[in-house]
Image (cartoon, rainbow, N blue to C red; front, side, top):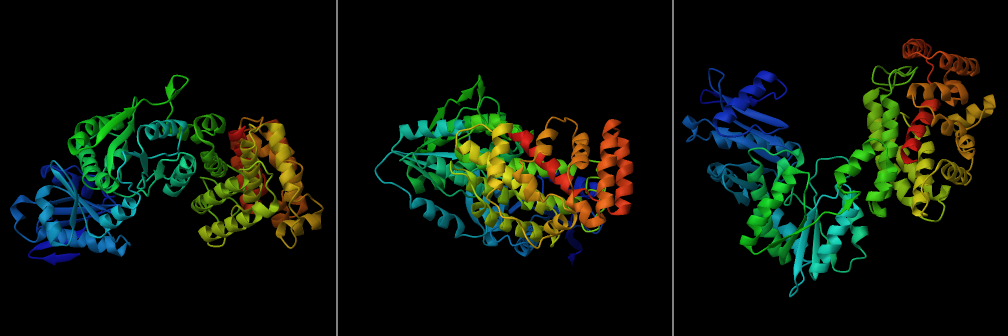
Length: 573
């Protein structure tokens, strides 16, 4: 909190309804829309009235406004300096600002440079070297004396529709540059993943170059409403700003004279972008060519459709809509989805779920969720390593598994949350990826056999808790179950109710986690009671069992891992 000239500068608590509404009302009077923000500051007068505000969203400074009666003061500089200090403290070295033209001199006086302009708006950034450096990197790909085209695409993930668009565009020019959207806040497919898939797919098209994406083409800085997928009063301004940057900087750096886009029959925002592009770019020497979208069964192929299918666990139709390079990434996501489905299932006896931590003092829902996120890359890497007609072996998979364990332990502060699930799901991920690469659709028989064949290449572990429990009590190890092809799990696939599937697994497998924590008598009791509960199943009884198991420290973690495996297998069959 800073006080000056009878005014006070302090943070606006955006989570507080009253403070947030006061900011929205002030911005509305200034002719601005209150964009979503991560941090905001305000200047208040002696009566606690808001007379100036600024905010930061990601790396973009937004909603800078000062009361009309105080425009001649240094208030705007004070607000901007406060946001800059906050941005720098968070490691944001090149903050940008999207603001009205009348505020541009304030930012220029603080070292900002103009990146792009649109009617009623200007985008500036703090690092004057950033844009020239980026243009220099992509400009090194420029080919003189030939007709050059460009596509800016999100490919989240890449589909056969994207490939159709690229192939057609490549046939119309001598050089085609693809710029992947880099600044997508979606966590579905990362920029690195999307660019790797795009680069692999385009490698066989001789005149195509996949360039580096940036915050200068369809980003939260240039086009924030794109990611909200809604048309607002600011949408046209954002579109024009994005296109101005392309026409002013990117097209000249590459020598681009044609920009290709796909027709948009369903997304109103993208359709509006295409409409304005057709009007704007030709005025700046860039032809716009709109290519009809590729369809399947009378429906346009879209990345959003693929994402929807993945969200409900349907790999097979996703495979039919995407190039092979995307398949390992989708398989890895389905493995994470399976872990989260198991975690979300509530109630569960003695296990962490949305309601409580069960029998565990060292785990909770948030910790387990972080663990699943940490395993995203390991599962993808397993799928990538197995995407071959050659059967993957322990030598291929164990280093990735060990790296996955390290990532898990780092995310959880050393707590072993999913080591068993990483092994069982990792084998299944490898099997699915290998089958698809070999031209085979995963089925119950070939998938189970492939898991068995991969598991046969692993040596028995020594010196682990699981090995010690198996030796002490004479029960199967995790590797034994894998070498058998997880018969109980494949049987659980036929059980629609997930709680019943969990109880069936608890009644059938020898759960080393229970043996380790509570001994053989408790393990036999859990199996018997689970079988009996299946005969007269009620969810309420699981809640009572959870209270008892939690008090007795009984945790059927092995059954939970097998349930996650069952969820994954359902999604790929």
